[in-house]
Amino acid sequence: METKRCPFCGGTMVRGKSMKHGYAVYFWKKPWSGILGGVVLAYPWLCLNCGALIPFVERSELMKIRDEFERKRLTNP
Image 1 (cartoon, rainbow, N blue to C red):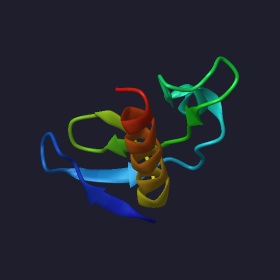
Image 2: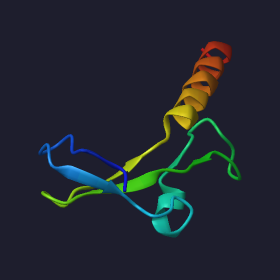
Image 3: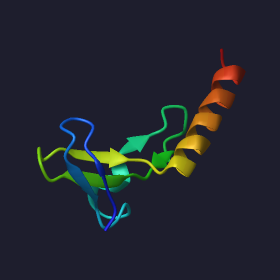
């Protein structure tokens, strides 16, 4: 089971089973995308100490979003 440290209390966080079920699918939409696109999938992580539920985006997806944002920002000042 994959774990990480909670950014709030330092406790143990465990990753949710899926990023494609429930409200994790609707976590965030790119503000520069149209009505039909731009959904960013994120795994929900639960802190077993403080109960925080935090969605985390995979690093590879985050790099793609960052690159896309930078391109959009440079074309639309």
